[in-house]
Length: 346
Image 1 (cartoon, rainbow, N blue to C red):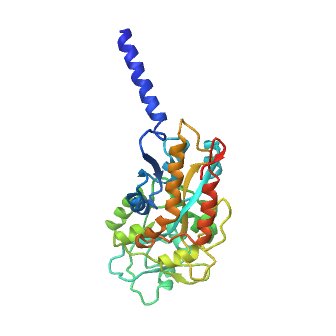
Image 2 (cartoon, one colour):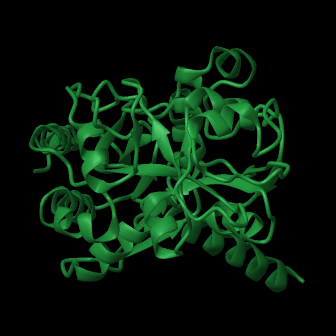
Image 3 (cartoon, rainbow, N blue to C red):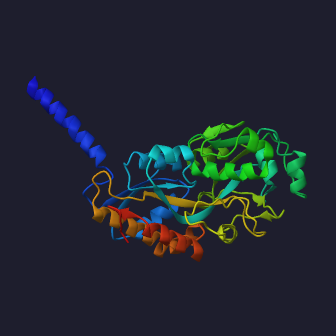
């Protein structure tokens, strides 16, 4: 019995050791997790990167932050900066490195409507508040003169999981609709006032495709890859803007603070698309933790350095906006601030 018990304890100890070392494994594979928003881009970049293997799990920004908090990955990725609660739970300085910017689009299933609808931010929020309930409502009709819109109930579909895409979407709605700001607010997971929940982009888009009258939000890259229609959204200047790489780039061409934490929704640029955001790779500023080697930390920083330089060539073909020169400079400075035993790595 003692032998069996000793073996059991050994197995438990080995499992615990493996879990602890998951982000500092001795092989050459770097581990990342988080944003589904950036997954198509990361998949392409990492497939071309040869210095290290990269295993990135597309589990949503909230999941990536949790994995980083638990120190089970080398980097997380989030479409929203860490909030105060997340920062407190991590209890160590975390760097935010911008990777790219992208657009969130509003997609729908309205039989017979073949053109892109125009939607204002206020009306869009009222739809997701459950106040505008029919596609043939005066608000939607007034924004779309000459478009024959059927008398059909609107079926709101939203993400049920914590999502950076939801944060970007609700960040925009909070800025353009006071009632939304008061009742719901912005977060990666909110108490949705109306509608059905679906997990991931696949879940919400699947629900909309099978539900006449459905409406939801997904990444531009995902919508284009899946031939989904999407609306023109009214920006701060009153213009209805089609989500494109160019319009997203214009939205992201802003002054970026030294920590890179900036919201670019509801852009001031008259030609910019208003539901856009950066996505950030998140890493610990001090890389000597959990038994990590300096070589592994160096490999991680070289990967992210590659992402903000050579990796940007992959953005436009996949419907992401490349980082501006000013954003790249900020990202470089942030990466150079990472340390191992208090000393600079790059």
